Image 1 (spheres, rainbow, N blue to C red):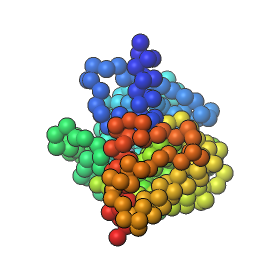
Image 2 (cartoon, rainbow, N blue to C red; image 1 turned 90 degrees about the vertical axis):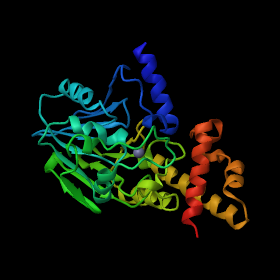
Image 3 (cartoon, helix red, strand yellow; image 1 turned 45 degrees about the vertical axis):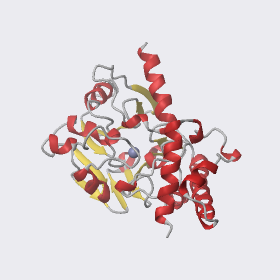
Image 4 (cartoon, protein in one colour; image 1 turned 180 degrees about the horizontal axis):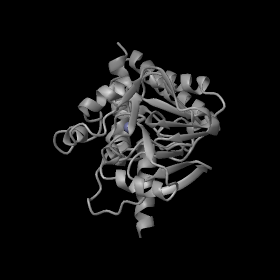
Length: 310
Ligand SMILES: [Zn+2]
């Protein structure tokens, strides 16, 4: 039964990453699904965004910490993989389904994010297009600042040494204005967070600096800049390849081009959204026109591109 619930929720977030922001009932079982990707790196699914666990020579790095209440389930899963201490957290971006478990991590842990993500985490504004139940809460203020970043970077940062090295990159705006790419060079692997949440129409969080005009070129820059990568951990879906990333960059560029072309033809946001169809070459992508939530996101993304195209 637990398995069924987990699979159902994964399909939900995989399709659109909308469910990731909805709080399940407090008594719902917190099932962390562990997938081994390398001898010393695992992907933990469930409870929000995909988490990476990297066992270094002298400690453990965790990338993204899921929804509120999922920090301890992550730590419980990690304990079964290694008895080393968790000493380093990296958050790919500000969203609550990627940062909230920070408050349950060891007190002296180093927490690294991109500069803009730190500013966003100080506010924890609601994401564009995600319905809020009441005013947004700031989990870090509720915990007297615990879980807030201790170290930031602008465009690049190299941390740890030798086989433990992690290279952080910021390639520009997309899902937010602080999307970090977390590269494990020795493992030929990168965690992309939600700027590549899966093969779907992206959540463009304009409230936190996201951009429908820039996301395609940002993804393209990542696809061209990142070398020697075999595996991409996505924000909410299965792992992907660099070829998938290049394709996803093109998908987002194509979307922008269609919207801007239709705008020139005098169409309104509603008309553009109503007329948009998933191009045949993107077969296998979640089709936003097949669900109400998808249609809402489609319209929101059209509007965001129009707002940015003056
Ligand atoms: Zn996100």
